[in-house]
Length: 63
Image (tube, rainbow, N blue to C red; front, side):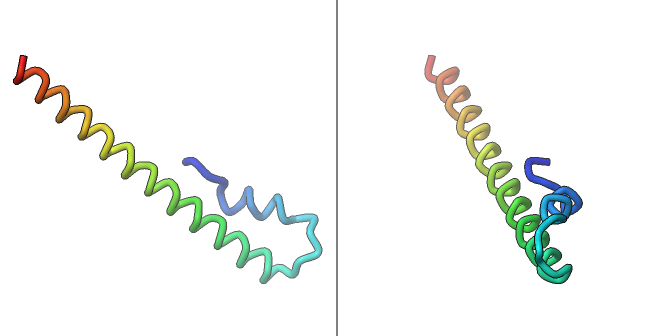
């Protein structure tokens, strides 16, 4: 996992003067954002690997 867990985010907010509801909302936002970033990175890595395979296949075929 790339980002922080909900528990880790809550620990970071522990000493703030925010209400529990606010901490929970912030935690949810950060956690969802981390998951979205992870999904985008995984998709980009997948595309890069496919492109490299395609290039390798094309180079092998042409040579």
